[in-house]
Image 1 (tube, rainbow, N blue to C red):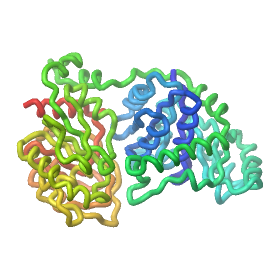
Image 2 (cartoon, one colour):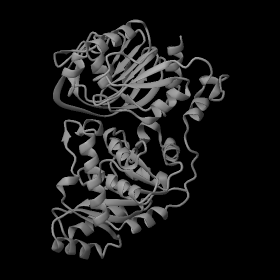
Image 3 (tube, rainbow, N blue to C red):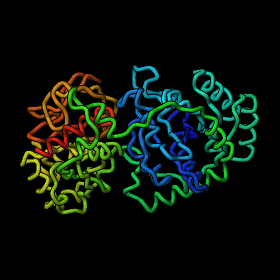
Image 4 (cartoon, rainbow, N blue to C red):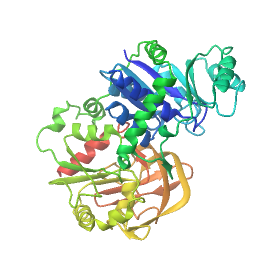
Length: 461
């Protein structure tokens, strides 16, 4: 039994991240063990959540992982905690395009049987706020909106008008927040600037958010609402259990069956340029028998000692292209590892790093392709099928992923592509070359745990 709240809003930009992160930090400051979660595929917000709570920020994505994994992944992250705070995505009822409620905050709230706190940007309304809240509260009877936090309230008079209007709605006001520049977080082309790029400033912002929440919200009422959530019957996900359940017929065995013997080193890129990762990926690699070692392509001039496999996830190599290009020793080491046939899994930023060039600056040269920044945002969920064998997937493997970038790579696919995509248009995408699998598509391995086992097996060969 974990007390839990979902922080939602009528639309993006209302202040969900500020409120959710502030609540996490404020409750953690009270001595509670707080489990942070984020609906959807977002990588950046969980970094701020982790800063607020001291625990990994974990994603709950019903599209990529399936609705059936939402509660187990939640229980995995919340194990041993006093309170879980789940930040929603977009508007409360917005989800995957043309998929009804799938992957929406509302769907996750229903799966978790969690009360919802609606964050409303009240900056340009007064009595109309009651109609807005009434509409959201009555739209789906299975979604329980337990309270409202009014954000960007201008004056005491404005607050009085809002409270008076909401007094007729039946939804209690649990907080009123004034505009506060100190709590804001800078953004750029893909959203907030990640914590890893501004740790000291981010820490100051989180502290300011916690103070704003303490002064403007009824923490006791919010905690009571969280504790009113009914019992959630869900077996916590585990990397070991997922690998065992996903093993081919005749090969089902305990975690010890994969971790015995040699533990090949799998190097995982991190640092300011490669901040996009899901905690479950490293957990699955470890459970599959790998020794996971992080390194920073901006600072380290060689791969970790004994590297047998390489994972380069998403991030912002376009921001750090000069520094990445200047680290010629590491670029050469990555190219040499790829030439040796060792398994290399690269997603989005990793794809750009393996390219011949990025915005005219030399990268690792593993792929015969060149990348550059554009003004066009590519964003959305993807249905993918593996069209080539690789250390990541066997031909025919189907999964769901996500694209999120403002770059293009030319050509968009190699002679041996990685994925065939069905939406928004049918096309092949990515590169498979030797042991390299490189693609724009972000994936969540909790949905396909066999990916980690396959990758580590290729490392052992």
